[in-house]
Length: 121
Image 1: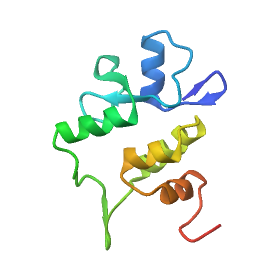
Image 2: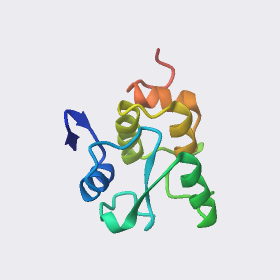
Image 3: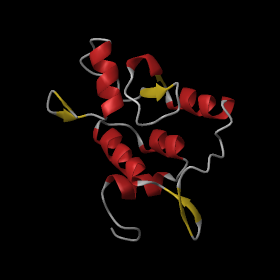
Image 4: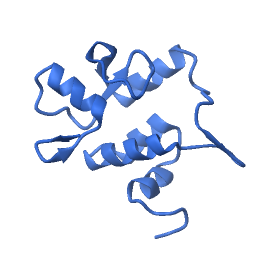
């Protein structure tokens, strides 16, 4: 989705439209009460920090969620995760915040956000 020339994820766009906001501060996340990351229902969305999102994840017992795509070394980011990381990074969200949100290292987030393959510079 595009909002004033800036690419925005669909759930952030839905939240902004519903609450008549021009933008949302990059340090804030739009969290899903329903735990469905593809949901754009404004009644299921709320603002919070990365810390709020992590607390919510732990409170709901999703701290060790196994919903990622499997590979030989365990779990990796899904295609939807990669798209969301790139969009949120383009909006100015920090590597630390994204790292905490997706449970991967800041280095991995940096590689994903820049569209590089592992090991590329």
